[in-house]
Length: 238
Ligand SMILES: CSCCC(=O)C(=O)COP(=O)(O)O
Ligand SMILES: [Mg+2]
Image (cartoon, rainbow, N blue to C red; front, side):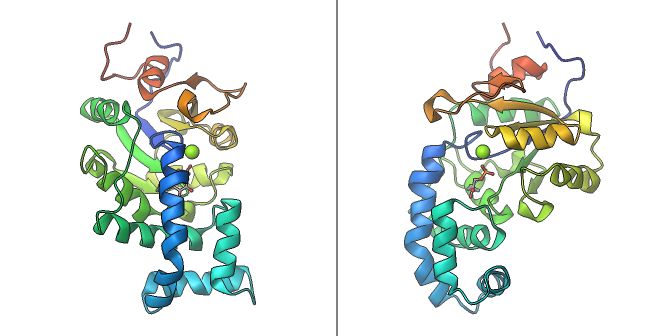
């Protein structure tokens, strides 16, 4: 039974650590981007995504060679738009060549399908660029699951640790804050979303070694979150 009085109508989902294993992002996606970025930057300099990213790098880090700055950001796991745009471009090539296939936690697709069937609105908010989000959900081991999602939000609405970003999402969609449940593994993101009035739940995946915070409800899987928040589930609720 739910301990919450207002069942959410919208579920906004983080990706890394919430729907996709941290190990997949850090041991497969990030190294793939690191290996292929220099060639893509050199060979596709004329592409608008590359041109815009290089311009933005020059604005953010004047005088630093683009690849040097990108390497710094990758070392820091910085969530910056030009890096995220270029990583998305590289991953696109990887999925196209059949060198990448996206891994999601096993509970994710069945649960999202159950939520979608029940009429919940599903949306993504990740630091990964919108094209990168569509790629990951478009190339999962279970096939293309992008149709489950109505909206895709990335750093263009702002950083995930800032309350204003969540307010921007509410403004853009017209969603009422209390109707939206935000799921993430990162407590600072949940703090920001809660400040904007959203309902929040931390996804603490034991296999990722995520540490549970003290201030928000915690669930180990999406079905656990469904039980906590009174959402319909793929698994019958006890
Ligand atoms: C689109 S999958 C790669 C996600 C990514 O680049 C990243 O930095 C993780 O961000 P998230 O906000 O999903 O934790
Ligand atoms: Mg995350």
